[in-house]
Image (tube, rainbow, N blue to C red; front, side):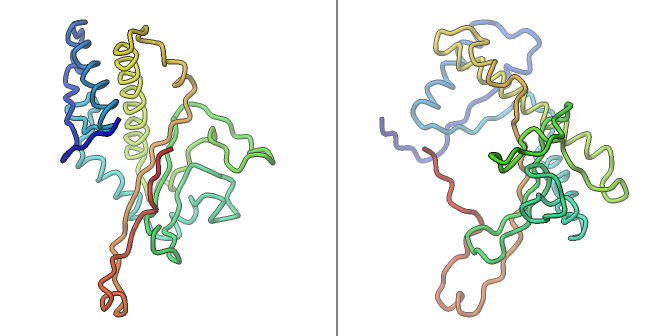
Length: 217
């Protein structure tokens, strides 16, 4: 099915913040989600039950990305800093030699107890490894708590959305719940540092990409 659109559909999730939403209201929301995701494939979700504002999330992310370089390097994944044991959680620097991958990021997993075993030879990363955090002098415990709370709230929102999609398919609301049991979901914070164009690139009027293409299969 091919769908053309000029802007992303907006889906209001305010009903999910109600203590006891009515089944009829949930049915309306589930059908809207189904229609949007089965046609456009993307949606802009507003009024979600997540308690953090955009400004608060950006502020927490800035606290991480404003760390000194040596502080971020101490948290870098083993791919970038071979002295570290963390293979998936933690930071990764901009790929300065690649003009299409100039972002830096920080990966956060569930705050619950996780495996500390190193990945096997057949694995490149350990998705269940614990989070890594900056030293206390550089990053407050409150900021860490807020980011872990944000991960937990987003995970809960995912559960709500899957339950609504199950309802839209005439399935029990917990039909997809097992997919989030002991979930390895990751909260990835991204920062796109400002780039200065070289004279040659200015002459060519070519833009420098900051992110590799995102492909869906």
